[in-house]
Length: 286
Length: 292
Image (cartoon, rainbow over all chains, first blue to last red; front, side, top):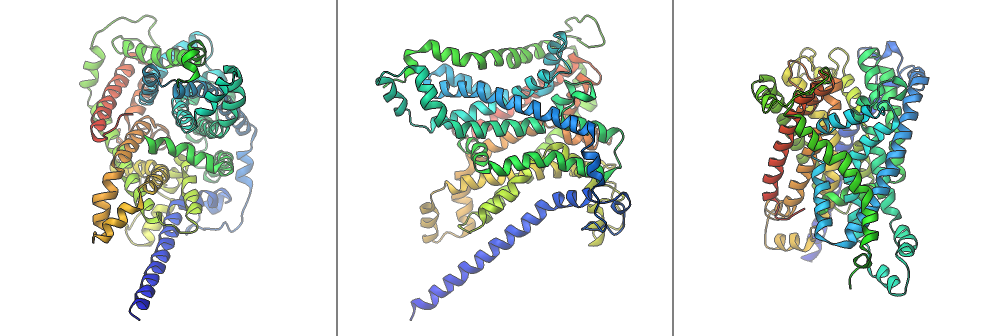
């Protein structure tokens, strides 16, 4: 008799805490997603409707006209440049990063720890400071305004993070399998090829996606290391159009902002689990 | 037993070689050369350069704009980190229960972290537009303001817009990492405290927060380094204006190098930046009782 009400009370309290939890979640999601909703709402509006007062949430006469601009030849060219640069950067950073991370994680030598500390510190190297010498060197070699120049910049940006991310990943793998294979007489090459590479595949995915997203978003290397508009990656290309001629073409700019976001959003949703784990694990472990 | 690499030092070196070469050519050399350039009058507009000692540093320290820029970086980056940490940790605490659907919520929030800075910048320009922006419209609708605010024409309002942009993009990351850290706290500890009569606030202040502190300091440091580099938002939205109110150290240094083509002066500003972050890093390390 005395227990029953208190259990009920407890249940009620838990239930209301649950409801409160959902209310807070829904509320914060609405606030945080609001700018994106407004982005989409604007991207489908006609020139007249975008300036209407009061503003309309759902476009009265939805139009795809802004997207015609977002898929114009020059935009598609920016898009293509970004895909090439991001893919090449993802490949390069992940490959170099994997080799380094594996050796550093397995060697456990003071010199390899120093290397890790160096790469961590390199995240704080001021980019404009590095860019001066990179720019001078690349232009002396005649490489400014090439994909190569931008890719180098993006590898500089991502390699340290990839090495840290993958080292954490290798640390979590048992070394005994490799030791056993070695005792059985397998060569180092064989061990890496048949044991290490297959087992590291999820790590590769996380690293490659991280690099792709970072490269896709990167603005300043893309702006500085390219000079002709046909070589611009998406962010730099959009920025210059926005500042020059399209400042007040809001639906067009919102459509462009949407098309710049959607590809990596799809990538993110497809590999969400890997990505969230990959990106957060390093930060939690510190 | 030692790992196989102990007996294959050559193979280890071969695997390390690409990263060592890359780091040497594209990180160490540019950094060292950058610091060297800061003592010269190197410029793209001058065929030759010469050593001028501390001349660039003396010039910078005598320029009022440089102090404004330092102040801006601290205020904008600091404000954004503070705001996104409080909001991120708050959200993490609120959803740190075994509720069905938390994963969906986490994905919905985290997705914002994917939005490219360029999209954030353009979007912010539209949302905070003085005449047709939705923010002014809503603020007027609920009666907080009587007439539209020209967000980008006032120093304080322009800074607020930039901080909100930084924070909005950072909150999701802060939340997801905080949530992961919260879930790593053994629930027995909190249960024991609550059996002993600790209130939720006490549990948070005495147990959760101290346990999270190393993670929070690390996270703040990482975000500090990242946001110090961030240039897109002020570049697109304000170009550093009005009256340099949103000109950050990165924007200032970048403009010196690639708009005024004064490599020496830009390198000096970059070196000051490097030293400042180094000091902050050393101080922050004292607060986390662990080494990286």
